[in-house]
Length: 139
Image 1 (cartoon, helix red, strand yellow):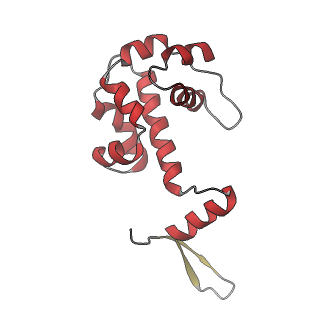
Image 2: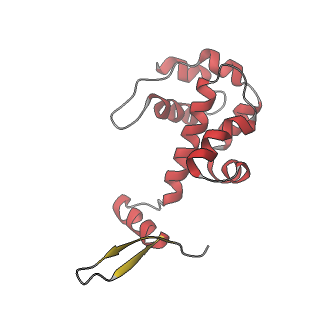
């Protein structure tokens, strides 16, 4: 991918220095000490948005409906959100079993720096499919 200029900073002489996506990703890797990038944050945000949509829906959602908050949050198309950002287990869940999932869902308590939905998503992903019973027990 081509490097993108995300923003710039001004030095003491007023000269603008662009900050690129590579700069941001290098910083994230340095701070975390792992092979972590900005895409990881976007993937997390997308998966949380999809999980929230499924957890709060009053009836079964179409894949497109589940992806609406993801598209709104990330500014991508439905196809890009589905293929590149939302966890595959959530895509599978929206296609089968979401009613059972929602009926049994009891979100865990929020933790410092993490919402109930984020904690629920982690529990769901750690448990694998089906994760309904595990999420219910975590409450």
